[in-house]
Length: 448
Ligand code: GUN
Ligand code: ZN
Image 1 (spheres, rainbow, N blue to C red):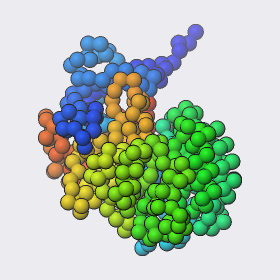
Image 2 (image 1 turned 60 degrees about the vertical axis):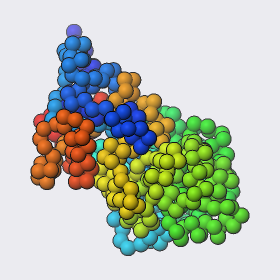
Image 3 (image 1 turned 180 degrees about the vertical axis):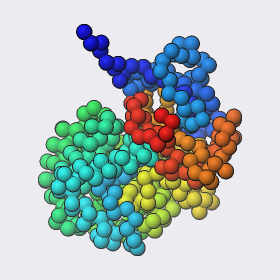
């Protein structure tokens, strides 16, 4: 008789310093929002957090479990990227254009390749490797107009057990034929994809009209109909990114009061809607988004790279609009949300505002989870949540060895200082390991 192999779902524990958030530091004093356990223990059973507390308090109950020792590391919840294009992975860093010509010259030709499912699968895996290398465990992702591109991406995500949201781009005008659908076909294909993927395992679907200029009013109306027919799905699109784009929308939709109104008239502005950018929003549009409870995905590296402008994060947060942080690869210049937060800080500075490291890390964790309605299962180390987390090395480079003490922070001020340096100077090199449902999905930690 052979004994049963040790199940990989045996309870496991992780010991280290932990940082997460229990409330929003844009709205409450940081001390009430930040949870920092200098010597903590996270207990995981069947991919979920069973217990979380100081090592001292949990040692008695869980001290016999196999413990992975990360005692000089800083463990944070998995990062959440609220807007990213997987098919644009290979055209990141395309030179010299602003939004509309960038789309024509670089984006549409690359996206046309995703009619080929094998090609789409290959890029999907490269993309997911890159997310995990950077500590991103969940993302809201655009595929292309081709349904195969969604299948390829969600199959790859499913194989890895990842919590992902994605959708087929709907685009029936102002684009080459190779990346165009029709209002009717986009409706039928999206419906079939929702039925296949929404709610399957850890996956969800987002109805994804690309942006107003590439959809006819009829296609936008179909998108609205899908939201009515499938109440749990998301709406994901771009909004008010670039000045020329906003002017074009006004020409294309002369009967609408503004860019957001185009989406409102189609029934697309809801509390499950995620709008990327919002750089050019008017006062009324900020108010309307707040009333509807829609989310803005803030994409600072993309807004700088494409010369789109400086998003007003303070105004969005003052209006109580849920905001997530996003790379917007390939308009954005990297997969690292640490680097993206660094650029968000600089965008805030150019608007004479600040962004503390705790506010920034909140956006990448609990804030992102709340903005995507995922905070029941993601965003912090609350018991019962999914054990997706990132192990950060505070000293991954010679410069960060100099800047950050090898001693773990002993108070919130030191923690704010070390995490700020990590955000300004760190990137994928700071990600020592990424865990999905308590299992190692990426590691550079030679000690393991
Ligand atoms: N607006 C419409 N499509 C896109 C895109 O692919 N990237 C960005 N940044 N903006 C868009
Ligand atoms: Zn985008």
